[in-house]
Image 1 (cartoon, rainbow, N blue to C red):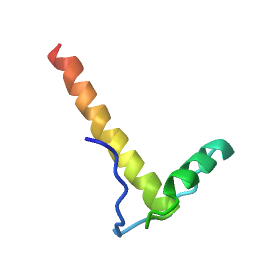
Image 2: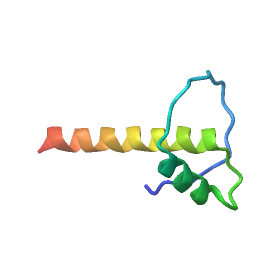
Image 3: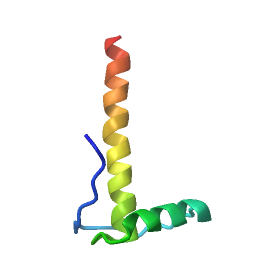
Image 4: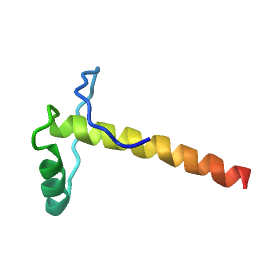
Length: 63
C-alpha cells in the first residue's frame, strides 16, 4: 500500500521531537498543495512505517 496523505483529526498528546533540518525541508516540500499539517504528515508516516514493519516482521517469521 502506497503512503498517501489524508486530512485527519484524532485525540492527541503533545510530544517534543527534534528533526534534522534537511528532513524538515523534504517533508515541507512534499506537503505543498496538500491539505495536511506537519504533525499530520509525521503521524501518518509513522503509522505507515509501523504497519509495513509489522508486515516485514511477519514475512521473516514465515521464511
